[in-house]
Amino acid sequence: MASIDDGRSSFTKKLLTNIRMVLYWSKELKKAIVKNMKRLMDNQMDPYVYKGTNILINKLNIRNEQELIAIETQFFIANVLDIPSAFHKIDFSSHGSVQQIHQLLF
Image (cartoon, rainbow, N blue to C red; front, side, top):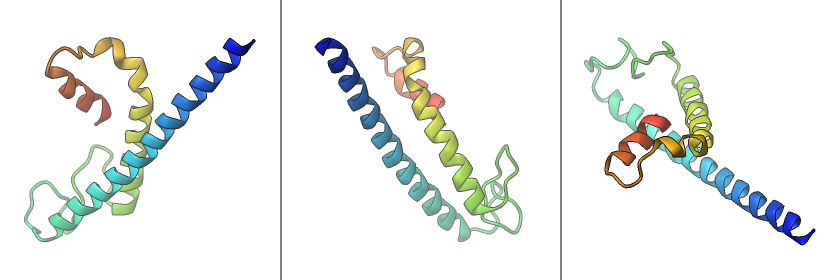
């Protein structure tokens, strides 16, 4: 019976660690997005933003900065939570693993 409790406790600790990691990185992602959006405000002729805005052209055609940040954060969190299911696809013995993880997250 103790081994079952230990297994649950270990799983709970890992789950809480992963949740903390997701929350931390979602905050960092939001900061980075806001920083980049502000940087783009200085260049109104940027071909990568919607005309008359500072919003990067995106696949969802979202032109509201706060909405875009919220949606991108949700996608990032979902992808972070999906990482364990992709471990078998990632070759951690090569430098390409960083690229594989990047593709998975973004």
